[in-house]
Length: 320
Image 1: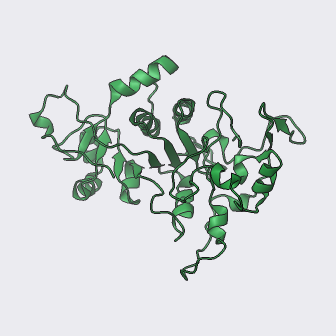
Image 2: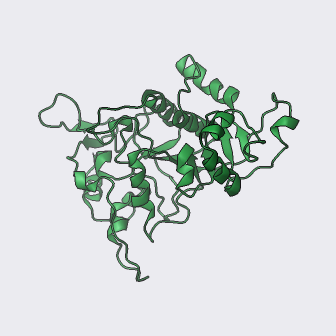
Image 3: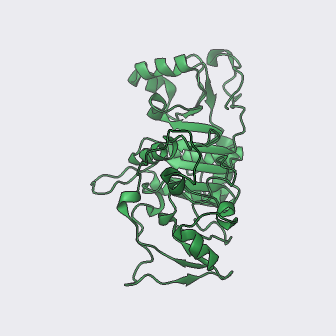
């Protein structure tokens, strides 16, 4: 879990000396305040959920008031925010979790740490021509890339919403950083009801009355499958008897890694049958990004990028 020493108060240090949190998580759940946060509850409110579902949970701003977390990403100025939300900052101090922010203020939050702006900008400027850090979610993704996170599970990070005449700024920036992270080898799983990458609204390749079958260079075939809206963000009750059987409804709904699907007796769902025939289904039918769980059920991604976003020409069995 996250850790790090406290190296004095903000008033006692040279402000040019940065205080960086010392932690090295490989599997991170990034949780924002958008409606697709319910996908996280659907995945974790089950007795079948592995305790190693994530090495760390990173909470964006007010999510820290609701979700059990290891790190808070709070990029707004702490002094201004304390004046705006004094009660919440009392909670942050009492809980003692690390808070990564624009400028560490140990006099306000003793466990605050500086955001590595120079180091992250060294990743962004060559790719985008500028740092391109316009919101806290994008900055969290960029931080994960800098820290060497191998699997990032994204929940509640929504910027546009179905049937609402409202959109928040920052979606393009977040998607750009996710794409860069994927290109550099990170596994990124987008929650199925998120608006990121049009996940919840993607109905297939534009312009085709009937969705075409696409053949990839390695012979794997891809075709969009019609979504069932009832499957988005659903919660399936668990079996609390403690009896191990052939697998509960939750296990059937939660994603399985490519390693599991390729193994003998990996399952009998439609995906396994199509896979055996050299075919692939869309990510819309695979829940929270295929490849999030490893064959041993430890919540680690061992296979290709689970979101299956095209990140540099690598094989993507299940494009989004």
